[in-house]
Length: 415
Image (tube, rainbow, N blue to C red):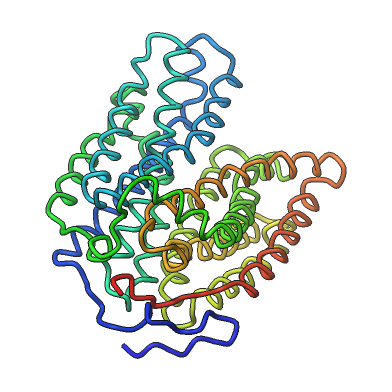
């Protein structure tokens, strides 16, 4: 496929964007395992969200004590990204990915059998290391293994796995928990973990890793220092896009209950609908980023997000709010669908697991307080305007970040 010439705002084409596209043999196994692993990672994370009341009763603590462990998990994610990303850059993608999946799956399976609350907290912290470590390895394996002409599509498909994991957790809550008990919610992922391990073992090692293999762990610090400006820019980008995602999702169910007095059933159905929109958006916008370019696709997603605000925040009926929330998540997660490809293309070749992984997880951690900001604004401006003003400010910031930032669409990772 002949790639469109980059715009003047993009980085000039270098030797890295030329040469043959060395696709790994059995690349389908690698791509499948990377995508399925992110689905499983999200599923294991969101299981806890659905079981807050049950866990609080089981460990005889207040609900806030269970919710607090989510923060612990988030705080440990950058640690996992650095540790496991370093291993993947030094020893290859396959073995660290298998180890990571089995690690966080076993930790998750042990969680419901924790003898006390302290043990539960420790297990959630340990799980955070595995969750944080997975994205960098999985994204680098998927992006380096897939053909360049499909890189944007698989980028969106992988990122859609996060929303799909959320949906599967919701389905499990309605099927597994009533029939088998709540502990089986934490055990259900073991089967998929075994499948992912088999798929990964059948795949070939990344050709890009073979050419850019990290010589030593100390070299990782050197490379990070050499690219510190790129690192800072990308952390800022990920922080802002995390604010966009958390700001449109986390408080929205409470917004529907508080402002519109909807029942839990109605809120649940709307949530399922906008998660479907999120999955479709990630895949569609990710796919079009191969033709439009990463930056233009990201800007298109932001336009869709901005246009959905009137219905999303000020809709007066269930239909209007459902359409608005669907369109909102189509745009928000559409932007996120471009991120795996965009981050990997802007990352140094020798640390392509560590660099984007740490950037991604630091951005998630720094952007997490956006919910607190919105909730504080709600007290002064009301729910509708609090959500609106916060998201408009974030969208404007992202327009500047993406519009003025670099791009290396179609970069040849093996060059």
